[in-house]
Length: 273
Image 1 (cartoon, one colour):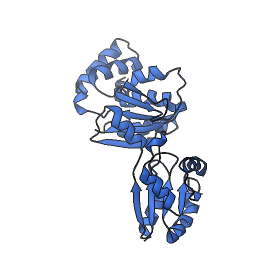
Image 2 (cartoon, one colour; image 1 turned 120 degrees about the vertical axis):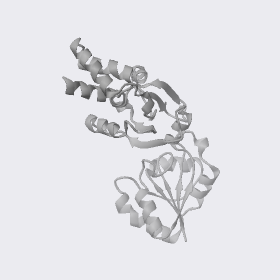
Image 3 (cartoon, helix red, strand yellow; image 1 turned 45 degrees about the horizontal axis):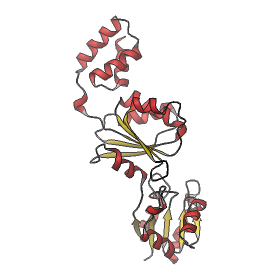
Image 4 (cartoon, helix red, strand yellow; image 1 turned 180 degrees about the vertical axis):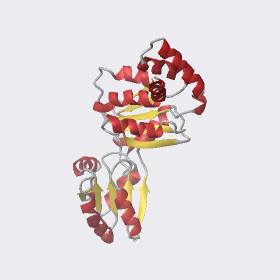
């Protein structure tokens, strides 16, 4: 029975391409590539002459039968532009179809941006949740963050340069001022990591015109950080309103003192007012 290989490729540094990955890509009968131009550069660098076919988000449904028919004749490899295929890249449907058709599906491990960022973050790695890219629209982004705000897992997101600041603002508002690591251009020439809290990260990237590919690793929610009861928080809200403190300022102040998420504090202020 022929095999569909899920082959990891470098996320930047070509030295991370494993000898096994190189061998497999040279031996299979076809490579299904997210972008044949990107993969073509990799193949040329390593002198691999295996033919490619494109397999990406907008043609994956139409290409499924073609790739499966190629599997009938020989082994096939699936690669993405960088990192491990199917992780935030097309391929899940192909893997499932190959399994259901009785083919062997085998991983060729290698680079993975989310795991690499987590490993060097200095944040807990025993329980984490990877959620891909945050939504583009503010409302959807905040709803997504609200869904995970009280989960006891380190959170991992991808983000684009032009949305990074907007994301950091929403993360601070919804999740609170947690510890965060912003990883940029990992394994590449300008690799760097920002480590600190979300507010510091927001200030750091303001006006810098961030460039590159970003992975955000955010600390988990810890129940023990919530120091105040609902009654204590409500009493402080009433006192703050009586003093004429603006709601947004009051929410920021009480969130820091109480351990409550700023958005939840603001909502309670709105109800009490």
